[in-house]
Length: 130
Image (tube, rainbow, N blue to C red; front, side, top):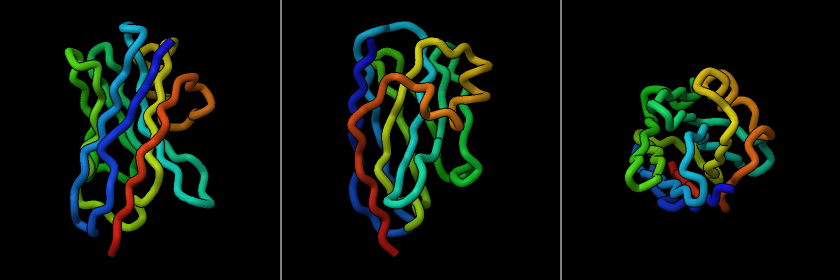
């Protein structure tokens, strides 16, 4: 079992930055953690994935060069640093965890298979104004 709590969302102007945090409690084993986002009327989109056993990451093309994902193992926390924010980044952001993926399946599937993730946080809203 894993419990996830997100924080750090808010309202910013285009070009601004936010850092989202996802604190994981429960299982301390290796995890595949993905930040997903969902805007009203749109499908859930994988934004960034990290494999906590070693820190391998993958980013969606739409955020490469602007977002980074990182972990603090001591704090059981995964961060999503979002720079150069655009109005189209406006969405509810969720972190999700899976304990079964290995590094390769995490990197291959982490962004594209939200239904594979059994553990989800409650979400944090990000609003970017132009």
